[in-house]
Length: 301
Image 1 (tube, helix red, strand yellow):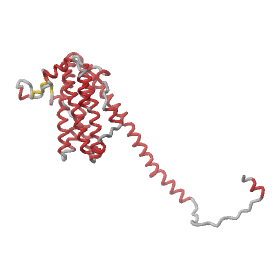
Image 2: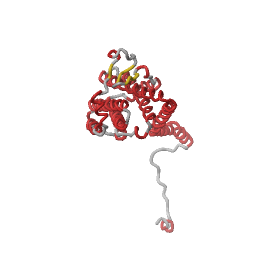
Image 3: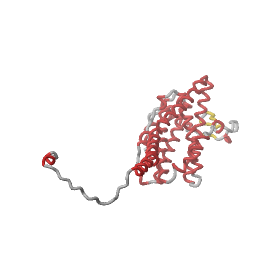
Image 4: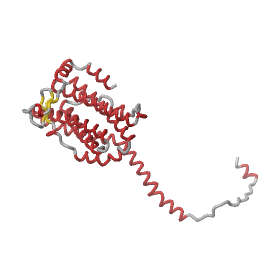
């Protein structure tokens, strides 16, 4: 299905994109192949992109992932469910980047967006295939999360270029930190460890090129706009994360409140009631014989 979507979307791309892809194919030249290029750069097409030097780690987020990983990824069923979610998210990102490549006028950025889209589509296939291998019985399962995230969000059309690049940079930075932490968590499972390691390399490239584009925009005199966009995207992502977690947080708080009520509040009242209530002998009791007059019996009907 993903390959069909990619082919259909490629048919809509501008001819310049297709010619550029055929001619350049977004080639990556390692530093040893280009001695004049600094060791901290990759070369994409005719653009020098900073790589390792611009990739900063999110230590707090990585630590959080390492702490919760044993609980979230505790068995193969949970791992398969998370892989399905990752696959849906990567597919949605691929569709957004393909649309960005279609609409972007700058040829260099267009090639980068197209390369990014192909990477995301490939990642979606990786996660989907691993989920099927680990939990074949639920291969056709598609939850509400998948339906929402496996669609195009039209980010490039809704955001200005600077905001869009800030979003890509921050999202890929967070994704790289997430996958790096999971790579360490699954060091005893080579197939999953290698999967996250392979995807992490692509994420580093995405961080590098998006940071490079933001640096270029800063040099063009948009430095204040770039900083404002980064702050705005951080706040928006934090707010959206809070909204997404609202349902889980509400469910947790309601369960916690009920447990407190049942095990902390109710037992003392039950104990007091038992102590104050006079003890009655258990067993059968002799029924009291009651005689009714005719008038009293007529009032019963």
